[in-house]
Each structure stands twice: as structure tokens, then as C-alpha cells.
Image 1 (cartoon, rainbow, N blue to C red):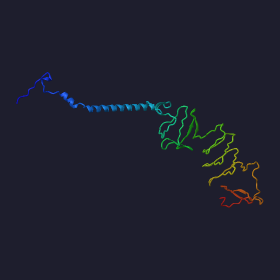
Image 2: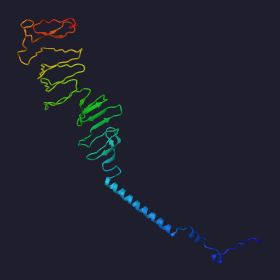
Image 3: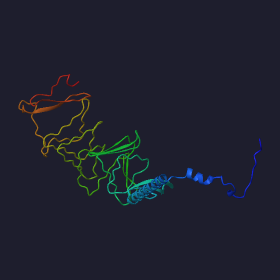
Image 4: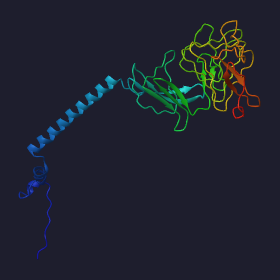
Length: 295
């Protein structure tokens, strides 16, 4: 078998039977006319969609006034705390009416300088943890729970106006009358040489461990009745001169136990012993009681 022979030529025209491989590859791998139009159409649609989304984002940024610090009514800032000299992060809310719902924070909620901060809600609950101090503000009042100490501090002088450790509230001289439905305190006193006057339709004074009243002159007046009640083992101590009358003449004295005493009146008698008891007898009878009553 003869060996193959190889020939070289400087041009492709020397071999007329040779085909243009580059031209054939273009016809085989190139984009057809319909496919090319489809690809161009998809690119146009994607471009239109991208432009539309860009316009929407620009409108949102402009309408919400968004910046690197937040948006129109909600901004984030880093401020220097002059007390601790540390950079702190704060969230600024701006608006006439803001509905926050439930707010969980580990810092402080403050208002603008020289402006009042109003918090409205049917029931506002400020809590420091599950078992910490809690302030509950409702329509009928406010209440502190799980608190060990409470102070009201002046914003101008930073001095305590009221302290639970020394609960003394001083009423200004310009205030002549104080109205309230209920007062819970361990002491109420008037300034020296001034009278303390309580006027109510129905006054009830209750002390869980007793009530003590001291004054140079004390007067109880009730249009219907004045009652002093104690527990079963309690007692009432009246020290000083006791006058059971509104006039200077005093109460009329009965001739008891004479038979001429009024039978419509009663005598007030006291048992002898360490545990004295008061009891009534008819006005024309002597003070006699059984041993069971005075023991």
C-alpha cells in the first residue's frame, strides 16, 4: 500500500474541493432570525421592568423622605451621653399622633426639650421585666407594683419633691382646699397654729393597726351620727376632757339612780378590772351587771 503524500500550498485556491469550514460553522451555530427577535424582545421587557421598579423606588424614597438615618417619622441616631460619655443609639419618633402598640425597650423614652410628652391609652403598662417594678396607668388611676422605692424629682433642680422613704407632701399656702375621693397615708397634719378641717358627706377613717389622733382641740360633728367601731378585741381610748355636746352648757344630767330619773334615758356604766367594759342600764336603776358581763 503506497504511503500518503502531503502537500503544502500558500493559498486555499490550490484545492478547489476544499470547503470553507468557518462559513459552515456560522450557519450551524448562529441565531436564527425568529430566535434573535425573541431574545431582543425579552431584553426590552426586562429593561422596561427595571426602569419601572427604579421609578417606584425613587417615589418611595422621596415620599417617605428616607435617608441614612431613617425615614420621615422614624429616625435612628447615635448621640453622646454627657453622663456616661458613651455613644448611645436612640430611635426618634416624630408626628402628632403615633400608635406604637407594644414597645419593648431597654433604655429611656423621652420627649423634646421644652415640650410636653403625652402618652394616651386605655391601659398603659410600664414594666421592668416579668418580676420587676411595674407602673399601671388606667382610666380610674395609676398604681405601682413590686417597687422598693419611689421618688418624684424636679426637672429644674433635680431635687426630690416626694420620696417614699420619707413620704411628706407639703401643700402650698395658696391651696386652701384639697378634694379627693380616697387618701391612703400614715399621717395627716396641719401646720402649727392652723386648723385641719375635713368636710365630707360620709367620712370613714380606717387603720389596719390602729388610729391615733392628737390635737389641742378636736371636734367631731355629724348631722346624723358619729360612730366609733373597733374589732372584737379592740379598744377606744379618749384622753383629756370629753364633751359630748355642741353647746357650752354641756349635756343635761339625770338624777339617776333616783326613782325620779327619766326612764327614757340610760346610764353609762363601766366594769372594774383590767379589761373595763361599758354597758347601759335604765336611768332609774343603779349600775349592776352580772359577773359574766364584766369578765
